[in-house]
Length: 243
Image 1 (cartoon, helix red, strand yellow):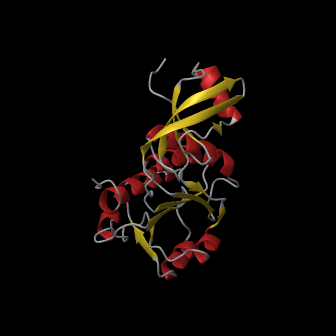
Image 2 (cartoon, one colour):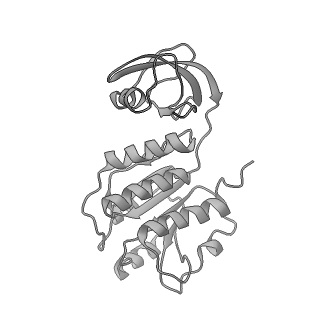
């Protein structure tokens, strides 16, 4: 059994000595999977109060509670990095959510385009994947997973934050060139496997906050493009260079 304390997200206020309840799934995971018991150490975070060292106060079947003891890390805001991705099939969407969380995305917004290969996205399931990834990668926040919407509606409601759009056509400038002199907040939009239709690209280019960018000479799968683009943005304009 690993000696590292399990790390759990709770949507409860965290303060020293204030007992908080686990979810039934967390209770089952601690007792049934990890074989932990009362008195064992855990780490807790809620996206607001930093990370806390805590103890299991009680654990029985699907019920558990914790007592936070001391703050181990103060809360800090996550990078304002937003991922918009054309809806893909469930395994790929879940993989994208996991990797986007590890890469620091603050928003995961599935969108429907004319060539989307999925007709629906289970936002609750994607959110659970993102939460588990945040627990594992030591983030202090969990990205927001928005309900899937048609791309044009998301663009109509966009707040003007610069949005970089993956464009597989060769005339688009490289993403690294587009990022020169830029900083977060930024959005990264990835289209479907077959690419955006011409009308969609024309609509995107009319938006003053949009810039199209290429990811090199090879055609990438949607999930690869999502992760590769986020990594480039973080490396050149994000928080990877923070002390």
